[in-house]
Image (cartoon, rainbow, N blue to C red; front, top):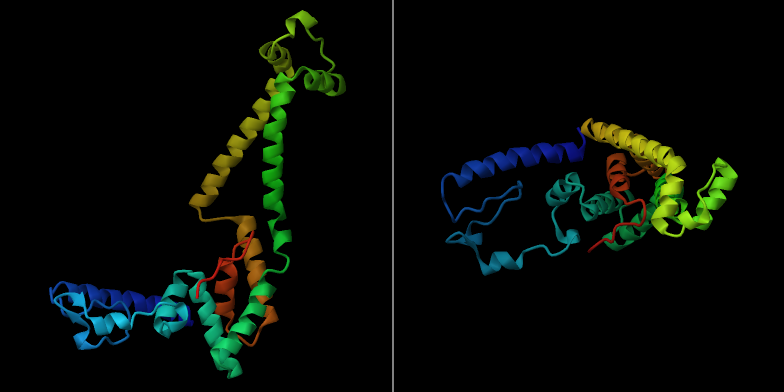
Amino acid sequence: MSLLHTSRALLSKTSSIARKAATKHNFNVPRSFTNVPTPPDSFKDGKPTLQYARALPKTFASMTNEQILQFAEMQIPEACRECIVRDIMVVDQIEYDDAMKIFKKIAATNRRGMQIYALPFYTGFGAAFTGGILSVPLVFDLNTVNWFNDKFVTAEMPPLEDLERMLEVGSASWSWMEPILGQISFFLLCMQFARSQLQNLGVRPYFNWQRNMRADYLVSQFPQYDAEFLRSYSIIDKIVEPHEMSD
């Protein structure tokens, strides 16, 4: 069983223990969700003491291994980074700062080819945006309507005195634009419905494929480190830009 899966089981078990402790209404007993022991004088009258508050970890680097594993299971980017950094420390027998330098190389490797994977998303956005903008002059602008009619339709246009207003132009062009726009709208409606059903099934074909491809590549480039830690980090990395990591 992997460390992350072990962490999931540990979180479930300790959460159950904490819920049982809560039912006893002992406010001086901390309701811990980890297996890290808490000193008995950490709470007084159901509130943390000053000594205990001073021990609050303010960075991910200062958290315990158990905390990091639980946050990594929740797909927190900084926790996934910490898992890799600490694995590097153990494998290469180096200190934290040196391990962080190696992690930066791993993060840069994970960004390779990201723009290629993002190309279908950019293409879909560009086509939808451009089509929406062009549809307006193709229906309501006289010069654009005449050009489109001459090139692709060759229908008889009304006399110029009936094309003086934008809505009159739209009325004339609608005879051939209605089937085009109507069919595109129906096609997109069907695709949207199909997409919603795939989401109900938890299926994202291309997105999952490219994400798994990136994760497999990262693991192949750094086989000496834990494969699940590398995959977890690769999967949560954004396509457009990397996540801005906190300390």
